[in-house]
Length: 194
Image (cartoon, rainbow, N blue to C red; front, side):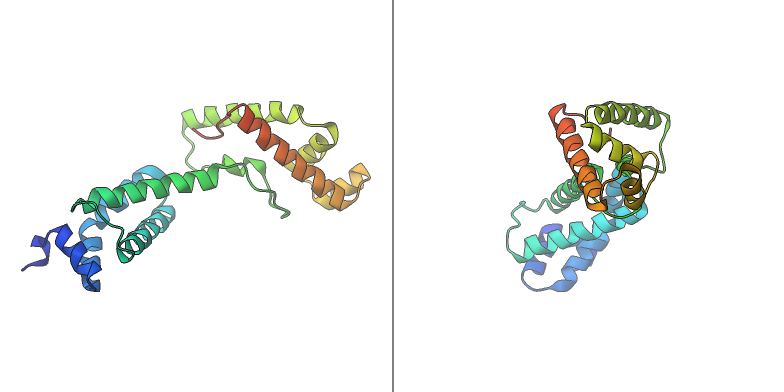
C-alpha cells in the first residue's frame, strides 16, 4: 500500500507497535501544516523550529507511554500539543525576569520584540509608564538601586560605591525590588504583554 494512502491512525498504531518509520511518514505528512501553525503564532523561525521539535518529542513520549487515545484524529491532537507549547513559550518568556546577577540584566527584556508594530509600540510605551508608576511605590532604598541599575545601567559595584552599601546589600535590594514589583503586578493583574 502506498504510504500517502495509509491513514494516520494506522501509522500511529504501527509506530506504537514498533515501526519507527511510520512516525517519520506522519511527521513528513503534517510538517508543513504544524510548522506554519506554530510560525503564525510566534513569527520567529528559530522558536518555530524549537516548538516543532518539542511538539514531536511530546508526541513520541505520549505514544511510547501508550497514552494516545484520540480515535484517529492525529493532526488535531498534535496541533493541540503545539498550541500548548506555544502558550508555554510565551509564559516562559513574558514573565517578569528572574533576578539575575549578570551585567546585561534589563527589566524591559520582557518587552523586547524586534518586530514591534505601531499598536505594540503604544502598548510597550504604556507598559513602560505602568512600570515606572509601580517603581514609585517601592521603598526608597529598593527604588534607588532599581533605577540606577535599569535606567542608568550602572554595575552593582558602581551602585555600591554611589550608595555607600556593600555589593551584597545592593544585590539584595535589587532582588527585593523585583520581588515586590512582581507582587504588585500580580496584585493589580497587570499584563506585561498583549
